[in-house]
Structures are given as structure tokens and as C-alpha cells.
Length: 526
Image (cartoon, rainbow, N blue to C red; front, side, top):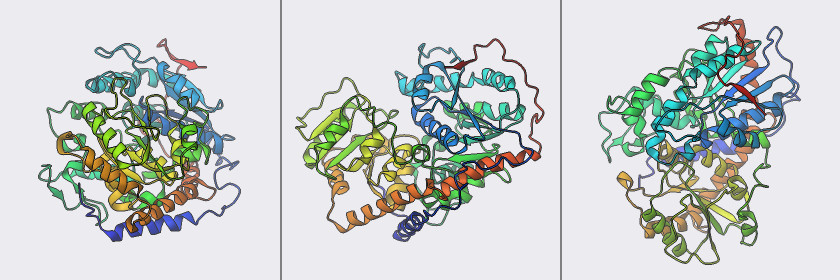
């Protein structure tokens, strides 16, 4: 396991910042969240187009953004979300009727099976790259959609992976705001290491310093995402995709939208912004699901497996919730070890398992619940019976856990999740880490048991400190999206700054010609 090398002072400072932010809940006037605020004179732009990447973890935050914008700025903005036919039902189920949906036909590109329009539905991880190439073929239909609009939108908010949207937005006379689903911390580290790679990424090598980041930030080589470590490798097909289809579209965007909040991430804003053009800002507007729905989760009525009723019969803080998200593949050998470790820990557990073929090798008893269907995760985390979260440390899950005031057992698997684990455990001090095996080896049951006990320990000094810090993070998250909070103000400022900026000239076609939709299958979804 990587040691907590970033130092106690950094963790203490983070906890202090969260505590300070948590107290800033006084409203700052009637228009603090944008309700009814006047449109700047001469703007005339009232349309925001949002285009998420077709993966549940990427879609949800932007669905929440659409909901937050229409909730807080609906009197002066119209919101349209662009997706593909197979994603329309999921999108509509998470959006209010006031948000419009536009559906672009998903491109056919063998070897992708027909009807696969989201990464979580891919039958094999080997199809991820073909899926990326298929999404790039949405370039022309999206440009045609923008050209069909009667007037240029205020902004196009689109996913990092959809690099073509920046040029399309510019040609239509609109600003592009990029979203990559990561924290400022992880984003800034990835960009810094891609720009100035260390001499070696050999496992066990210590990166003593991350360029353009605060002095306390260090990472281990094995925590660096593979895409960053292999960015310059000409034989890396993902690297070629990034070069060909994304290029500099990210850093040439007008701004970057971040699903985080100042008390958690503001120390890393300058490092992130340094990679963008002059004047570009990182807008911390999260947690977006709280901005969209306050403390009420829209998933509470969607509990087909009866998870919440099962939790109702458990003692406060007694259950550990386990979920590794929708993307990471967990081997059956690892699932076996997790099952043994959970049972031997003595703690009740609710475990979301994606595999439809694996069977537990041990009797989980009445205090163990394995669920293979939909789990209302935010409602589960908010339930009083849950005392901790064993998580892959996807950023959405981290935000949901902190907003619920639940500490994490960080078990990262792919992408930037190892950096998130360092952020959670080593810097914020709101969780503990599993000693992940180099090369993806199986973590044994004894270590699983040990770490679950450490997570759920309510009596030790270290555990009390961890729970105090996660409670401070919860208060800060709620304060951030409340009237006058940092994220609420940032969302208002984002809209107003976009409206002011059109006194300038937009590059690549500020006076773009708008044409009728071509016969390309674009349609408005009902």
C-alpha cells in the first residue's frame, strides 16, 4: 500500500478548509443562485446545449447540470441535451420536462454490436476503443444540428472525449465549456505529468514532485493513469485516438466545468487552469447532484431490489456498502476473496455485483446482501445504517460518499481512480486504502477483512478523526450548493460571464451560417 506521504499538515489544512466552508451558509441576496437575475443588456443568448459522452458515469453529472441550470436559471435559459437514441430513456428519466432532448443516430462501426450505445453495455473491454471511434463519427450530425438553430447558443457544454464539439461550437459562434468528469486534483496531475513526464514510470519509483502543484502533492508511479504514462507511445492506440480525435480541443476550450467544490479542490485550480488559454477558468459547480436536487435523491423511488427496506432493519452505522461501479471488471477470483473478507470482518454488508454468473463461495448469512440489479446508490449512502463505502473511487462515487458523510475504503482499478484514492485517503484523510496488487493481482481475503474493519472501526482515535473530517466534507458539500455557497455562485457567474463574453469575437466563425437540418436522421426526442 502506498504510504501517506503527503503529510499530516496537508490533511489538517484540508479539514480546516472544509470546516470553514461549511459555515458559509448565509444567503447573499435573492439572486445568489441565479433565480430571476436579469440577462445582461444586449446579450440575447438564452440556449445552452449539453452533450455528454455515452457512459453512465459521464452522463449523470451533465444530466444533473442540465437540471440545475433549468432549476436555477430556467427563467432566462433554455437547456437542450444531445445524446443518441439508445440513451434517450436513461437521460429522460433523470431530467425534468423543461429540458429538451435531441437524438443523433449512433454511428454503425464494426466490430461494435448493433444497439450498443453506452460503454457500460460493451460486452468486452476490448471494444472500448472502437466505441470511441464511433462517437467521433457524430461530428457531422452534431455540426448540422448546431447549424439548424435559429441563433447561436450561449454555450456548448461537452465531454472531453467529444473533441469535435469545440470546432463545431466555434463555427456556430458559441463558446465551448469542456467537462472531463475528474477533480481538479486528478486533472491537474494528469496534465502536468503528460506535459513534463518523469524519467521513469517503473512501479515503486516515487514521483517526488508534480509540476505546477502545491508542494505536498506527490504521487507514486503506479498511481498515474496508463493513458498519461503512455501518452507519447506511438504504439498505444488510445494515444493515437487522443492525438487524432481530441488533440488540443480540451485546452482550447473557453473554460472547464468541474464537478467538485472549493473546500475540496480549490488548491489545485491554478495548476489546472495553467494548461488552458489566457482567461480560461475552471468552474467548480459541484456536487452537481446536490445542485440539481438538494438533499433529495430522485432515485429513492427506484429501488427494485429492496435495498433501502433491507437497510431499515439494520442498526445505525453497522453496514458496509460495496460497489465497484459500472466500468471496472472484477475477476471471479477477486470476487471470491472479497466475499470471504466481508463475511470474516463480522460486519453486515450490502454488495452490488455486476457479474451475472459468479456465485459466492461462502454463506453470506442474514447480514450479507448481494444485489445484481439496480442500486439507488445515493439513497443507500445517505441511509443511517450505512457506516462506510468500499469503492473503486470513481469521482462520482467519491462525491456521493462525501456528500453523505460516509468514509471510503478506496479500492481503485482504472483511469484516474488511483489519484482519487490518494486524494481521499492521503490528503483529505476521509478514507483508507486497499493495498492494490501491482499488475492487478488478487487482493487476499485477510487484507480485505483487515481494511473493512479499519473502515468500520468507530472507536479508535484514527477512525474518529476520519469520521470528523468526512462530516466536515459533508457540511462543506451542502454549503457549496446552498444560496451564496461557492458552487452556487460559480454556476451563476458562469452563466453571466458567458453572456458578457459575446462582446468579443468567437474564433472560427463567430458569424456562422445557420442552415436547416440536413437529412441525417437528427430528430427531437420526445
